[in-house]
Image 1 (cartoon, rainbow, N blue to C red):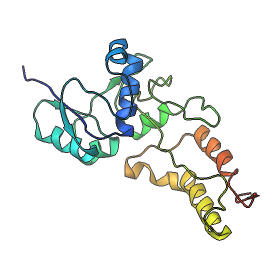
Image 2 (cartoon, rainbow, N blue to C red):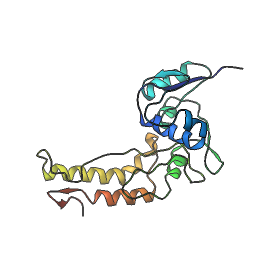
Image 3 (tube, rainbow, N blue to C red):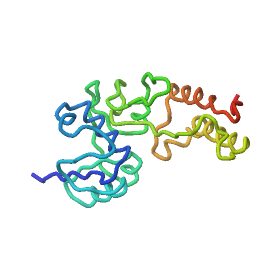
Length: 197
């Protein structure tokens, strides 16, 4: 009969947004009383700053529960719970189950939500990490060479760089997301001229 201590973020975060978006989809009461966002008014629990702070308190306090990115949970040897997805399956977070969560129709030029994924084997508390760049790279005196370097780096990240994601405890992009990234990267220009062919 050990009490449960909830540990939550004190700072605004994408991690909080993803968890609370899932909870808002999975539970009407949560949606009405708390909602979702980067910062929440938590009705209970102790605050901790960032993923390292939450991981630290969860590891220190017996009977505590919290949420962190998968990389922090694995890196800190934390116990991980399986979560019920839309298909009714309990799925544990892993690089594989997060990649499977992202195997959904991706709307063009928007921020697709992976929470409560329709993927039967997908982990329902998943999300993309976004990198925002200007489409037109000729700004603040930026040279074409520098713009090409950025475009080539981003191409590498979405292609050859995917070979390194699982060793860092991140999920590789599914083929559909890579194709969409390719289309977006091909829109990068310098003085209106494409940076990638």
